[in-house]
Image (cartoon, rainbow, N blue to C red; front, top):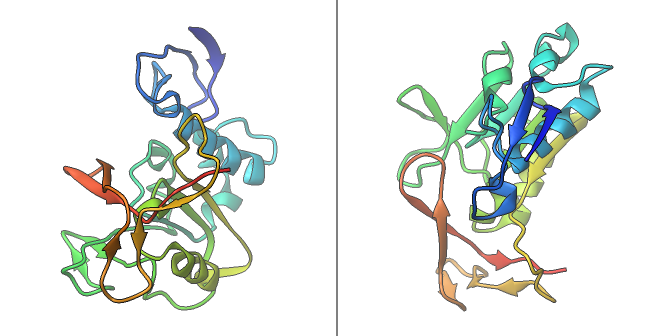
Length: 204
């Protein structure tokens, strides 16, 4: 257990590992952020902070507030600080709904086929999203397309220890029909229930 000023909320807080994956543990006693969420917040602060020490302070910066930010499926704790900024947008994905439509006030977007115009955003934030995308290389290409020149994509992907010696493909997505190669892996999707993690298990 340790007490230290936090990258996300700026408070002095205590962290204690209570079991499970370390990156999802050591939650802040003030804002409940995990190591993964604090890592994302620290990266954003390092890139845009201009001397500010946490995401809470960064959100008060007029320059940062002017950025067009997109957070697909983004339910991390940093959204508490950036979610009310005037140019912040977020979305969920429902396969049965038409991309670009709104469901319960939230946009529906497929990262492999975004409906936004090219060069729409200064910053895209994804936190443990890309492992759920059927063809992640297409998602990366789409994110690049909607980023403005000089824009940034800050993201996290799951890491399991010990690291595998090589990446294992769990699903063959080369055709229109998924062909399972290994047993399916699920974890919570941050909204409801569990969500399939596909198509790879990353290695070194």
